[in-house]
Length: 348
Image 1 (spheres, rainbow, N blue to C red):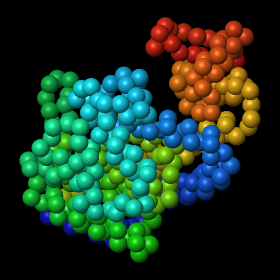
Image 2: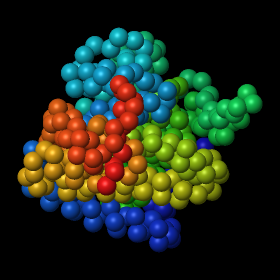
Image 3: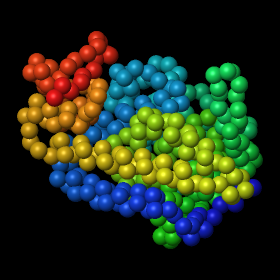
């Protein structure tokens, strides 16, 4: 079976891109701490938005969808799911809430990962909930001409429990002994988790939940305010490409994990930059229309009222709608489309 040694990663020569990403993330994480002290109330609204987006996006990557209204009801009001997709979504919601509330008391171990999987599957009838896989799984791609190609063969079922134990043990060792920068150890752990592919189903969603947990435990809280899952979903081809590049040679320890590490770090950095943009809009006490105007100036091309709502979390949806109407009347914006397809374009 493949050997895991995270201590050896410490001695690798990381390129300037990765070191630059790590430095930039630390700089913005320090700024975020200051922002949180200044305007905690306004920023709490970002938490609600991010939870909804994270739950929606992480499931959508796997083709599990429902309406925006139902997502909001399931996440904010914890309403009962009505169908299989909503049951899957409710399970993700439950694990995400546990991470938000108790991340600092959740150890990184196989048993806890299995427990997360069991909770994630708690609303569906899944006899393998909370258990490692009992059949060999494959990572494959389907093409338009109908053929399917196996891109990667994960570990066999009999090797999986030991491998999960090993990556948790190695991760805990290098983090506990301060042997490896957490921002490098986290993507390496997630990459190994995805290569092991420990469950019959739910591996992608579990990997994103674990990413959030590991970041929180290392003091990087951007995912609480800006959805990392939504960023991944927006450019999921980049995610799969980075994963595919980094998987070659994994079984014999000759893989190049750098593309995946860069992808994850770039996503984290983009989220921190988004957080800074949103804080810049809420930090001044402005009338609603001026706050919306400031948010609109951040947008290029088409945008929706929901895009503006995310940038102005202290405003109600009716205040955002009223401000957009005023800007359309004054000739600052053009409104296009009907119903749920309405979007806006800046004219100035």
